[in-house]
Amino acid sequence: MKNKIFVDGQEGTTGLKIHDYLSKISDIEVIKIEPDQRKDYEARRTLINEADVVFLCLPDSASRESVSMISNHKTKIIDASTAFRTNEAWTYGLPELHKNQRDNIQNSSRVSVPGCHATGFILAIQPLVAEGIIPRDYPASCYSLTGYSGGGKRLISEYQHSVREQLFAPRPYALHLNHKHLPEMQQYSGLNSAPLFTPIVGNYYQGDAVTIPLFPRLFNKKVTARDIQELLASYYQDERFIRVILYDSEAYLEEGFLNLMECNHSNHLDIFVFGHEDEILLISRFDNLGKGASGAAIQNMNIMLGFDEGLGLV
Image 1 (cartoon, rainbow, N blue to C red):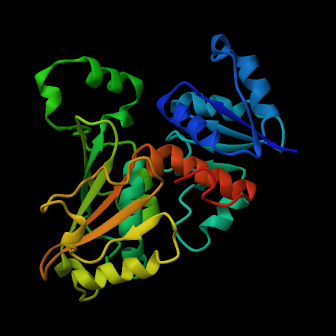
Image 2 (image 1 turned 120 degrees about the horizontal axis):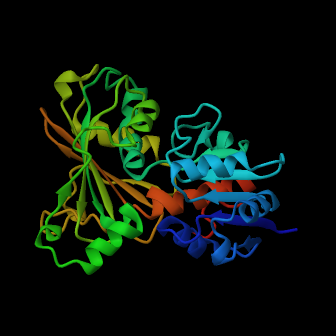
């Protein structure tokens, strides 16, 4: 019998992309709600309880409402909102986090999909904290340059239909330093406090690069940028979706520039290490709609259902 899959929030950017991935997977049955019933409580509740796996692509409050509708022990939830990412009753859906995380995901019925910026930050920094190189009280900072699709339909429409000159330049935001990804960035990186984080939206559709500056003089151990690259490469050597690029490699740049859209339309994430004796720069490059959202959601579904982890993904 095929597993029944329902996407609550099927018309949003993440929901539409999840449906695109699901269309490539044959051994499932996708059930859909009628467009005029998308906000009908009883119609949603019926489908949620009928499904084996439900993707929640909703605002936080609506995700909480959907979870409250479940009246059985069968339905598994994969939530793409911020609502449950630091909730101890939920499993954080980052399979590459550590060696036991896939088992945690497979044995869970409640999985939260990581935020896009958090994914890039945690995958780059967590192994260095776990190895005792970066102290837990390290004053971390990072910035992220991302495409406007991460802002959903409203921001997409603004960029695609406006002729305002200021939209052509990158725009920093969340300048009160309270971005919604900060709690998970702290909790799953192993740091005692969240990084000082500046997200920046650019005038292009998709693609994300999270950049983290590091100062070796503040480390617990004396290591070089090359040492950092080798450690990360070893940590992720068996991960099909994570690639650690050769140290300081000009071969992966375009006349000295980093193409942050190189991982678009895939579930892959590249980690770059640049630097010298006094300064190190880590960059995580990925698709904010892929490994940063819908691709990660599908990867989690595959693990939860016992499928090949890359089923339907590129």
